Length: 363
Image (cartoon, rainbow, N blue to C red; front, side, top):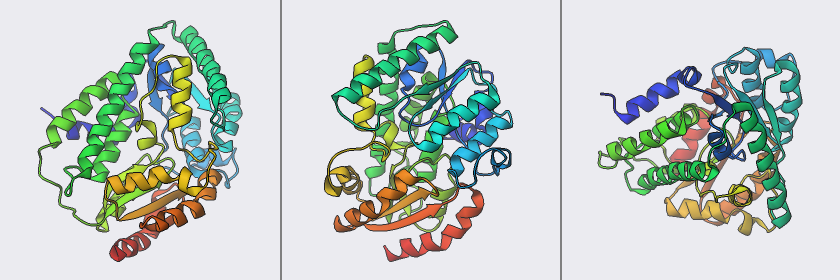
């Protein structure tokens, strides 16, 4: 019988092939899309991933090459038909690149269901009320497509259980010698993006039981936290760990931003939860650096981090604008910081290897 880690590795390698034929999947971009709504409407949420091993040639015929390389990459996969099995697509108003892709996608692919989710860029009572109406509209339209309308509260409970299990898994990384590598954790996160949530919950329970008492993996180098946006592969984390680092924490939109909190029940509660708890730079929050980035310092201290790598995708304006402030703030807090601007390709990884290794050696 396969262990949980073996099954997770298999899902990671198979990627989209794992989801085909398992039921109705609705694709979504960004962690601001309330996955509970998709589940309550009888479908499975599938986080849209790119593939660093495949250049975005098809997308480059339609998109500027100075556009976000991740967006170009996953859109190229859509143009190639790799996401044709989806029941529908939800595209939120997060950054300008994601917003613009909605119209292009709708015109070129003409999916049966494509929904634009308007996400406010500020956090206050009016924002939550507005967003709650947007979530309610999504629920109504998606349930018309699927023909199903389940209890939203049950979907909230399911996804909160998954969030709790992921936090428990991350808690094991606080140990002096964590029983799970950063590469393995990234595979866990990607697996969760590709399978039904009920299956993911069961797999997480098996995984935690499997690893909580196992011996620490061999790497015992400096403890690293990675900050950035989309990371949907193991390549960079593998590079860090091969260079002697030990990735123990992250602030990624495919990582803790999606589960370091629980969603409240109801449309308004859900809106408030998503807007208030996801620390993405696309959302404006009042306060200077010591207020806006305190959560990063708290995470770093809780997980006894030695160094922070700012993994910033090229042309991601929202993250790049925050880099100088985050770098200076984290240095004042006593952390070593390495800012990196990266492209979305495997070839980029080798270019970064020397810089990452030199940074780890200084720690």
